[in-house]
Image 1 (cartoon, rainbow, N blue to C red):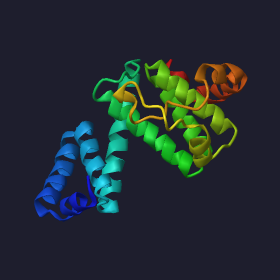
Image 2: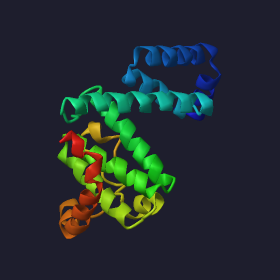
Image 3: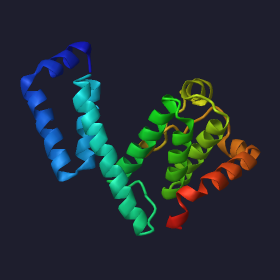
Length: 195
């Protein structure tokens, strides 16, 4: 969108009313896909931060509750709808913790995600992040120094996640296997009752 189109959308009362209704309806129906569609629009348009935060909190609540239900059935999360949005919410929350220098909280949440998803590519990328968190690397350093900006995701389902790095993931995981095993041992209590 151009700056002019963004301005028109921000000031269009009909569109703003539509977003308000979409927010209410998505929250009422607990439709995480519509919640995210609305949230993404609000973020692009740089709308009221209070409303954005309120919708994001509802997304997190719904995600944690929904994941809890799936885990109680001993199911792992695949990338089908609505699971991808639950994974996205937990992942974004973990990254938010990391950017706010809550290293322990980010590591714990990423560990949980790695153990509840049914996807090797994302699991391996998250395991790499856990290793970097073990080294107390802040998110900006990790992002600037290790994320491969040039490589595009082969599959759009990974569009919400950092999975491309400027090193060989398999070699990195093998080289740092001891660190990862120690982290898994220390964090195992977070998922023990589930297994």
